[in-house]
Image (cartoon, rainbow, N blue to C red):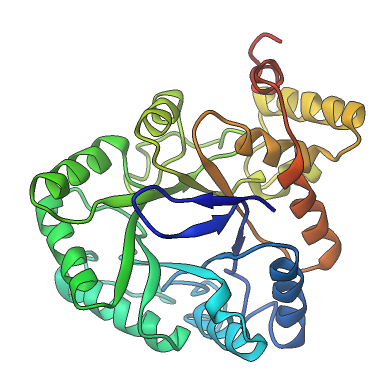
Length: 314
């Protein structure tokens, strides 16, 4: 796999990111070792987890971070990989009770402490705020996160599910005050557009055309989650079935057949061949699927193919 240098950092990551929300629950022990080993030995070095994973599974809260940290130590990979995790998530119901002010200073500090303990490390490579809370001024948020950098618990910071306006405001404040800015944005993006509209849940976003232009201009990498649209391009619905997406699926399948790939591989290549820097997050529980995903990292698509896949003119 190719390596990507995240601007304004010393982080060099693979152009695919292993999403670990199922580690410690449906995938653990020898199965987790096998998948992680195959990913790393094939050139992968970027892993993503979160403080809230996998609260939706009975006894799953914290399992992802614990399993990932244990597995990396067991395999001797800690010094060879970059681990990103996230905190500052709103209330998730009975499995993940949170206060109304879920990105207050006390909650951010507590989330970081728990993530460090679960991962078994003393510093997090890349820390994302999982959601935004627009009631909290960006100055307050950036001051809190930069204090964590100063005391050595975080190396770099990012924003997840933040609007480009709030990211720009936060980074402008950081720049004017000699602080570290957000260096990456984790947000939903795939060839398929979700069936929900931005704004219904103010803490959730996906990439729009205007967003893509912002990231292209700013050079801020997008760490794209739901990059395969929940398996939509392998025939699963997962909340993405609509008329435009069915046409995108048809076109991805047509191009895949022509080039000798799968529709899922073409959908991932669509992201990795954007003008903006996009690093797709994937999740898998078997080696065959992992190899399919990793092969997408080498696919080159032309600009006219990118436009055609998204239903623009060829």
